[in-house]
Image (cartoon, helix red, strand yellow):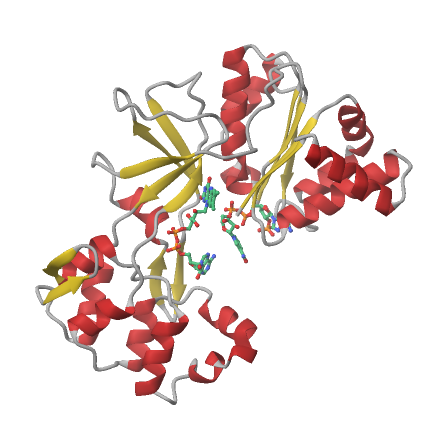
Length: 346
Ligand SMILES: Cc1cc2nc3c(=O)[nH]c(=O)nc-3n(C[C@H](O)[C@H](O)[C@H](O)COP(=O)(O)OP(=O)(O)OC[C@H]3O[C@@H](n4cnc5c(N)ncnc54)[C@H](O)[C@@H]3O)c2cc1C
Ligand SMILES: NC(=O)c1ccc[n+]([C@@H]2O[C@H](COP(=O)([O-])OP(=O)(O)OC[C@H]3O[C@@H](n4cnc5c(N)ncnc54)[C@H](OP(=O)(O)O)[C@@H]3O)[C@@H](O)[C@H]2O)c1
């Protein structure tokens, strides 16, 4: 995990705890060279982009186009030149799940290496999507830190077919933006903020980078003098290497700003321990907080964690509130209607 801070002093940039930040990254020059090289194209070749106009190929690939993410349209065009490519049969709409699995971790350059298509510079730019910004939950509060907006980012680095690959924006932040101007924008969130009523208790479940907004919440509630109790459930793989904000969180627990800090390090013992393990262990206490009006928040991985935490919450409510599963679902639905169940999942 890396923390990044953007200097916003005097810029007019405003945000609230719980908002996200949009980041416009630039593609890695090594990846731009790799793509030009594999296609035998000069980086100076002139190209024309719909909105941005005329420029050299290297500028189009660095600043304007998504050269990491693969699209069905891109693969379909390449499959016409290389019908034997291993992805060609996966383009059948009936095989979408197989295509999605195959796409995971593969980038444009990997497919170009495998298929070596004959493409002119203008053909290439015509096949690529415009670059999109990436969103990051803001991990600071404007009440506590007025001159800087901060992020908590997991930097994506992995290998595909033996080639080192990295995520566009997370690696840009980690490797190439120190001391330079970066295009950012606030992305206000509609329903994911600390409660307006500072006396309300909050329970925050944020494994991995899901901790980001909750660090912002905790700074915010300390600065505003909110009197409600704060309970954080954090999880990661190993306590020794992944206990994000350890000193800050332990100091807040010692001072009482954090009433409870429950930790779930999944790989520090033989069996997996996840945030929902802690939620269920502390079910009676969690039920007491909810009955006392606490708001429940969850942030982080949408694909599995958020669903599993939702199921654990319902089991806790059913068990300690003596309800059937259906009644527990109605209780959770009511929490949502009362804006006491906030989710920021991705
Ligand atoms: C509202 C919101 C808030 C967010 N907040 C945060 C935050 O606080 N912190 C944070 O770190 N992220 C956050 N994210 C995620 C963030 O926006 C990016 O999606 C993330 O950083 C990856 O972007 P990237 O440009 O680095 O990677 P991309 O270039 O977009 O690459 C992503 C692709 O890499 C591949 N891939 C991903 N993981 C692996 C892997 N383990 N092994 C192999 N291949 C893989 C997949 O093909 C995936 O589609 C948030 C997202 C949203 C929508
Ligand atoms: N779609 C995917 O397959 C996938 C995989 C990884 C990450 N991601 C994405 O990668 C980004 C960054 O992830 P991150 O670094 O914040 O952390 P993360 O990958 O979400 O992991 C944080 C912690 O959550 C644990 N975890 C795994 N499955 C869980 C579950 N079902 N319920 C509760 N906890 C669970 C992990 O344990 P273990 O690792 O020990 O299982 C780890 O201890 C996020 O955008 C996330 O959505 C997606």
